[in-house]
Amino acid sequence: MPIPNPRSGETEQEFIPRCVRSIIDEYDRDQALGICYSQLRQKMSKMKDNEATEVFIIKPRKSENRGMYLKRCASNKKMREQYPNMKERSIFCLTSFNSYYKYWNRLEDFAEVPKDSALGSCIAKEKARGKDYKKAYAACSTKVVAPNTTIVLAEDLNIFGYRPDNFDMCPGAVETFKHLISMEVNDDTVGMIRSAAIVADKIFEIEKEVLDNEYTSPEDMEQVVKLVQDFKDIIHEVDEEVGMVHDVSYMDGHIEKVKEYFEDDENLLVEPVNY
Image (cartoon, rainbow, N blue to C red):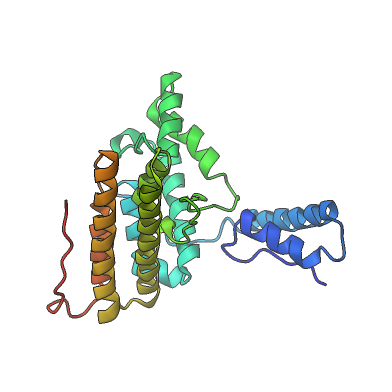
């Protein structure tokens, strides 16, 4: 059987298991792993050879955080033409954002990465060692986005047994659920948190389809609004159980993004409620 090649946009975590499964009948596991990693290195080498290719890049705006930039970049018309596949487009946007801030000479003029994120935490530690913000970002971003290395957009979240597929659409949701799963909660609250994750994942799935199709059907619009309300209701119940308040107003932004492709919003009867 031919040895598989990495697909466009396929991460190392996706390619290696797929490659090993396809050749495991012909090689033992160590040999299969060696062959598959060799294929991956060859792909990375070809990517490096093609680095000079001219591509359209969107420059981050002043005070625009990563989440805001990724949404704007992924929905840009020229970007959609250049990268029709949503996953490939998102990967390119994330690479562009990190590369821009890594080499920009006036990094301090732009919004800092939130300190409660993995990247922000790393930057805070580097700054505590005496580095200025630009050098701290450069040091930490190379750990997150290494040149010619396939990027994993979303963390491998395990939300009490549920692994979301579409959380790369919302860094805010990632941070919310990372905090929720770190807490000691009872079984009922575990079930509510898992349910909220499933609802959020469905919202992001619909948003991805809308961005790819550049069209929002009335059914999609109504479903997203109702799902966002369901999500807020569940999180509100969770907050009452744990005695905290999680700000999930970022979900309204996903409604607005889906609404951009909806031609008739006059009949939209359901409006989200903020607690």
